[in-house]
Image (cartoon, rainbow, N blue to C red; front, top):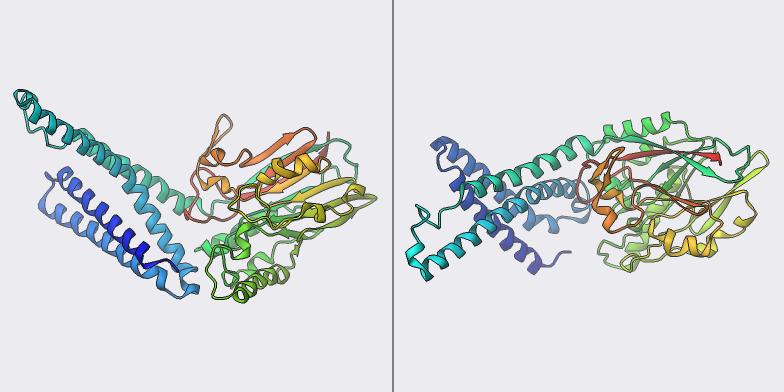
Length: 416
């Protein structure tokens, strides 16, 4: 539960920013017709009052409602509000700072105070319009990402070259999904279309690399039949991500948290996904063997708990022809996998979401994720080991995708 003092502080801060920007916008639209001014002022304050009421009441709703659709909808509104206001606020503050400096100079050197031909405290037209434009563009861009990007599922196809790959494994296709985050979805038909599209790829085997929910097992209500439709000849295997443990929710008792976690595990069973919890499975294809290793969440950064035990999970994997590891957090690769388990040829991860925003084309790749993770999206290779980082199927926080679209991965193993 969010503290009352925190809600009060946010209420005062956001309300103050709303009032401050309103004063600036009044100057921008001072030449507009009176009816237009009334309409815009009414819309501005209706929006502000709505957000303030939501801020004050949302944390105190029943947990199931707060963590469910209400939270997703309100996160959308708050994100768009901040996306528009923050750039606008920066421009307005810069202009007001300039006005203060000019006013001080005019008092110190009054003989120069009228040289500009007007009142030095008047807001510059350029900064006024630039501020509105700076706020409008992100608002429009992020709105586009919510409306069109959140469910715009795209195939990512990669060929993974493995030295000495047995002929019976040459051409094996792996379908990978990651970071579903069911608690964020607001369009069930779009999600069902994404799963149908994934199945059309007909992968030989399917792997899910964690974060089925945001926090609660109850988020899976109504979604089990949707994701149970995922099929492959060799089965569907999964691991847990950092959000699956319920660590980001407040629990009345440890037993309540344990019951929630058991609900997440049950969802995997109900979907017929074989969940690997620090264990391995031998998958035989003809005379060849793949060792599929699955670890619980293990992140190199201290804020993520280390549930994974790769030594335990590895088991007898050295006897297999190829070793494939499912580990949710890609920081695991450089921190432990490569230094200590150099014979694991391929690791599949997710977690980063590619930050859900950025630029990706044939010539250029950029995302804020690259400042946090060395490996944040796509295929990476060091020596004879490779890592594939999935951009994620769902979303959390920002309820959309801008430039970094939701991913359906299809990896083909080939002998190099």
